[in-house]
Length: 186
Image (cartoon, rainbow, N blue to C red):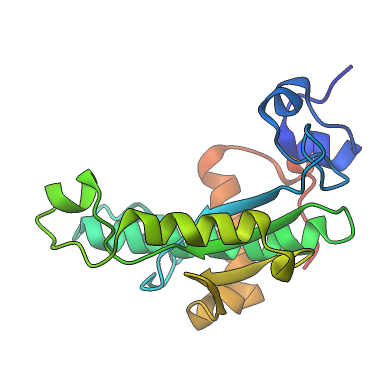
């Protein structure tokens, strides 16, 4: 019987059939076509402090909502999650990285926000392709890249206590138990 979730597949060392069809990385780090695959998360270098789980209203931005703050908070949470996922997948052959491909690329989202584009989409595409294909990043995991270069994310992303609080809050908000996801010891 195939595992139901990608996390269960990774823990069991068996990719799900739909992951094979999509070419998503198998536990040995190879996609269905045999090419190296990197799982990545797009992230913003301006990400701000993540939610303080002592007050879930802060995490949900129920007071003083700002779209920019919500965006930055979500990107920092992605970076924090990816750092932990990189550690969890170490020695499986699967790598995960965070990427801020470019700043204010010329996309419909940026234009609708009334922001003047600062980067071309091609610049962001080069950064994505670099992580997916470059031998220079082969085997590197749990890292943050700004464009084509490895960089440092916000300091809080590297704080194990902050990441543990984020994991606790995420489990609480989703109603998922630690046991069901095989949570990591940090």
